[in-house]
Length: 268
Image 1 (cartoon, helix red, strand yellow):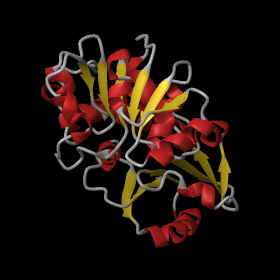
Image 2 (cartoon, rainbow, N blue to C red):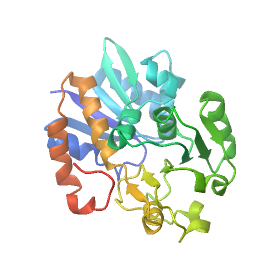
Image 3 (tube, helix red, strand yellow):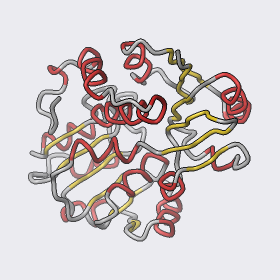
């Protein structure tokens, strides 16, 4: 049996382990302090067959080029969420972009507003590379850094500059993970968002304040659970060279029942 896991700091909100447990796989959560990440990578080389990486460590592999081989997409995106241990190397991939775009394939967007500038945000930008992505981040410098890496990024200092003119609004920050208000949109509570999609990469809790703001304004809404599902299927293809999409979806239904996904712009 493969030995797999998830590298992160605080993993109490993650449902990844539950999906892989349901599939009968050995999957361990590794909550690791920043100063212990390199030690974990060396541990993984000897003890694991593969692992996922979540916040805040998706950029960490690039600090250790002697340990990693990077896929072309991981290099372009500049973030890693999936690692295969093989032939004495850590082979790094990014499946975030596939997980993000798959649930909204078939929809046409002209402009996007993105909150956040971390590893997940990079995957969103890559997924939407054919359209302008206006990026707002609380640390403005990071948004400007992304504009030097991705030609479709336009940094903004005020979401209101562009909010009315976009048709997809994405939250790639951790704001809302603890149930706190999405204060970055406080000024627009009660506004009309008809014709837009509000997409939150957070899935636990299923309905964040960000999504409530969009829903109350008449927008379509989507949380990050479908993204998790499609990431998992891509991860398994990398680790096992198998397509277990149907099995992953069935396991996922038991974790977040249809009743919690009602009203979302996606269905199993």
